[in-house]
Length: 458
Image 1 (cartoon, rainbow, N blue to C red):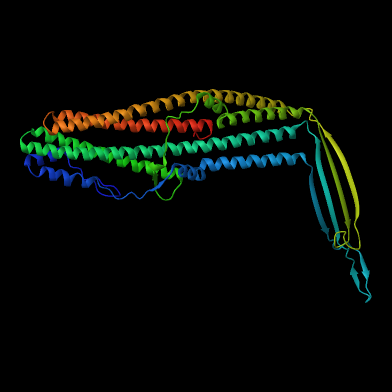
Image 2: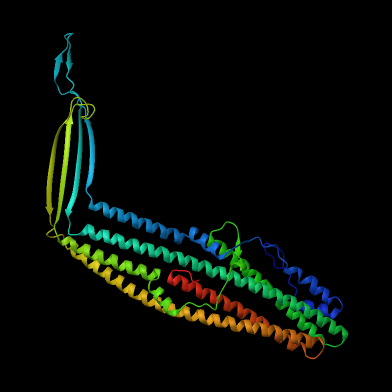
């Protein structure tokens, strides 16, 4: 006994059925009541969703996509900070000082000696600082921030299509499982009909008991194929549900897929798109950021010039100089020039690190470009090969179906043996599985190509 969460599946061994055949008339009923109901499962509660809906939900819920969007926002915030570094900084201050004691006394009108308390002193101040020249470091940092934004945007697009690729791969796996289940269901019905025919022919004395035993084997093989297909579909549905981030189980909708395999994309156009794909764009932006960082490291060999301006006021006015007793103000403007003559070779280390980072970024960019060309060649070859295989297998399935029909008729009238029919049925099952695999390979190759170029193929 094998059970799942839907309904029990009863497995009747070939030996048990063979024994039932030996008993005679109860064999057909044993197969019908023992095998077929055991394959019946509960209704599928998974909700059908289209491929576009699955991709949209996954791109919203995927941790990778969320992190990529966060990195892009962080990069934009870094650019704002780099712009702010060019502008002067300003600080506004306000204070109040209250003095107690001090040793001074006076005699009041009642002749009593009391301590003199000084009036509270209030103060306001404004201070501004600005770096007038730093060798171009701030400008290079701003350029680096712009390049990092480009890299983050390209990474977001790359992650977007990588998530779409993962969803498509799993979505097409569900479609393949659905097609396999349909093929197994057809195989099961075919095996049952063949078993009934063999039983009738054995009873009529026009066939040997071997035909009935082979019919039992065919029914068992069909049963196992159907069980495997149903299990594969359940596992594929569960994986798809996780990818889209759905609380309710979901499954693929075969009616939402419309393919035009005759309209293959142009290779020359795809080659241009591959050179500007998101992975290549991200690598190019990283090179630009590394170049600006290298320039900024050399700017530390130049002196820096800063300016500072401050204006402060103080008084006893409780309204901080806005009342009847205005504050007395004074201002101060200063300039400072600094140049690190020797900083324990820290500048040299920074320059070396920046140069190495630039060399590494260029090497990565070159490899990414070559990798895009290699992947493009592989995906186009796989796409065309799978398309041709689909066309061949469609013709093979049609021929195998006709062969099974002819062999079934010949066996019914006694013009051929059961082995010929079983051989034809096995060839049909193989052709159906090959067609399912060819469709899956075509869909995956197309999805990989879309992820490479960073756009959908129409």
